[in-house]
Length: 309
Image (cartoon, rainbow, N blue to C red; front, side, top):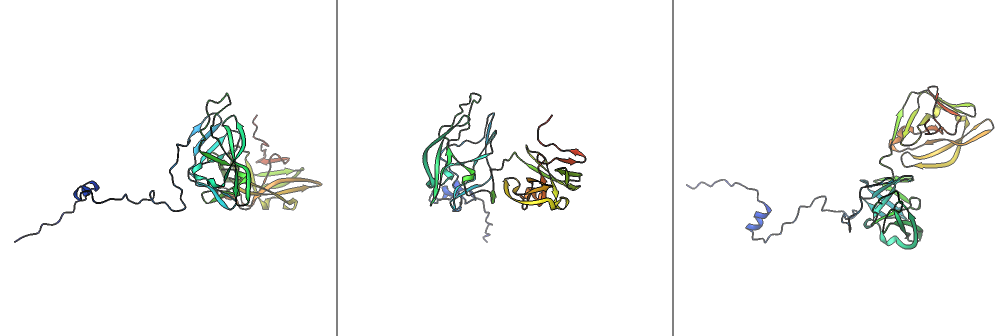
């Protein structure tokens, strides 16, 4: 009687399978998230090795992990997951896009040049999308170098393009629109509810008093005290048309105050819809330390500037 032996399945390597079949089978690599790209995604190949991390006495660069996009003339003209963030002493941060991630059809070379002793001679592009044109709205450094004798090196910005922030229609970090300038990853805000006894004096009159302020600490800036509107002399407030924007807090609106016969223009500001990070200050009012007579915290006057004695 013949007894059939059970079949033992042995996993077979790709090399063994090809050997047994005489190399007649083509084995395709597995399709992973890295090998499948949607139409919206940019290829990650680049023509040359781009500058990444750099640091000297005044400039630091690093590749941002954020997805950054720029709109101009109703079109996305720059779209990248590997933007270079340049932080320079005395300036707000700047995004430099790999040229492969910029729509070159919108760039028109110009004869305009500027010189920076920290980075070299910049050449410029005019941008045109349809009928919308902005002269010298983008720049690049074909041969970056430092002419400042105090600096030994400059960041290698070859292969990158930067855009003037205010000349663009919109900037986006991930899915959120960002205003004024790129957010600096080393700049932060802390927003804390407090129980200090706060008092604001303007024109010799107490115009706000509370024991429930929201205190906002922001890197490099004065501490600001946001007071519930119910604890402010709202009868003295006059709406202003002034609007400012902050990349970390959102869009600020202003009030002027009239005390007696004197009007103090734009001395108070507030955020109707602050960013998520600053949500606690929504519809609280802040007074400029440096524009009022005094702000008192638990009986002590708070500084009017960051100068230290």
